Image (tube, rainbow, N blue to C red; front, top):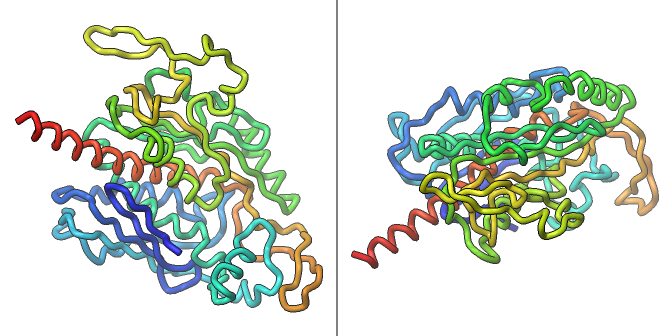
Length: 369
């Protein structure tokens, strides 16, 4: 019953959506890093509710309270614990969970915790828990950026509206503008179509999902491992921890099924004294190890299960079929707020891989000495 990611760095989550607070403990983060609070706040603001037309009206300032692991604004190397007070919780919106909400973890959580779960607003299963994840990811991203590694995400697909992919782009330009967009896309002309898709779903009491594509630039070749601790395994582990993510693929992903070997292979070539690749179909990973090209992966994000339309469910107490219509404050499309969460989880995973590789290089240097 663990809410802990355990790699070269460890992340533990705690709290419930409508409890007193939520938070995280990050263990294994290096000492001596000055927190860039402006960057952290910006990441948190991108994830926060109540900030735009297409987000939940729940108002949370998401002000982090650092309890340990930081002194005089600098990381100490000890476990770093941060909490976020829940300021706009409305437990009265969830008076009874006798009828589980379709698409949520109400039923499975009830079974798993023997009926003792805090079900209000999804409790510990809620996307609210991604606020501390974003804090941890922003900190890891800050560390990685100081080493030349950048992480960028965009909406690849929203409903039936498809954006261009990162894959053909061997270099990334103007990445900062994506973080400033309400609907981050490579083709700005698609924004009105996406907005109309969200509005239509909301007017119908429904919701809409899509695909987020993420790109990691600046990674050297050699990070990761074959089989169980591959780059894909580590990043997928974290991506599937995001409540709405139901699928993850790398590079061409399921598109490989229709490609011949001659089409799918990435040919090597020399660029000065460096080895590089002519294409990036593999998404920067081969044999579970980075090859020096941008790591590119996609996350399928399901439509928000909290919808106003009446749906079929059951009464747990009466053991009979029962209708349910979800009340409360919910997002008609979670994609814009999920983007910084995907970036944060990617930063945590890459940071763990980076630290593990640093340890390997240290051991190798020691052996040669």
